[in-house]
Length: 231
Image (cartoon, rainbow, N blue to C red; front, side, top):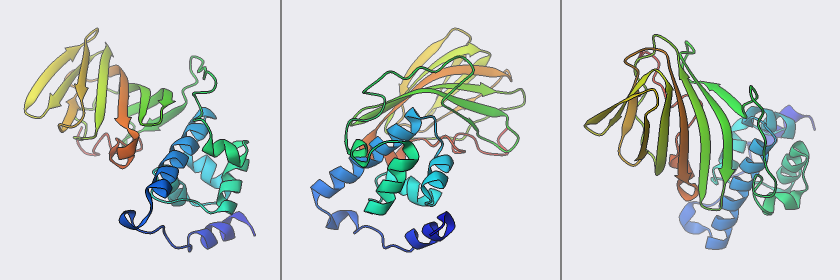
């Protein structure tokens, strides 16, 4: 069966039972598997698109597995392990990134995302650490001249922003904090917040963390940070 046929076949398989109908053991297994699969993928510098294509499954299915919304069948597990170059058992072992160091050389970020249609904001993921209940990312955000406002977000976790260049106004609830080059600010993500760029071109080094058990509420890095048209 070729990859396209496999994807079509797998996408027809029924979903897991609803959350209230599955045992705690299955729920915990699904969460652990999703976290470890994502950890191995990031550890190998693979995007979700690259992994789903290599494994012959749809991107939507991979996203559901990694976010613990779905548990894969054995054939899918085998395909994912093969695509990652690991054994199936490794997907149930220690999370990638905890067993050996991950070195990212200058100019080689783990992933880079453009988060609006005009490429006015670029986010580079420089590092990630996956723990059983917490995930932490080191990010570099570069806003080009002409970018003005980011989309408000809210999640169970925290931010640490360090302004490398330019200016950033962090708006948290009804309060505003004007940060300039050299300033650092730490804040929780439960209160809706967003950023403004009063001086145009800005570079921010940020640490983002969230609770894995609420991963479905975490900030997405593929477009949710900036609202097209808000510039």
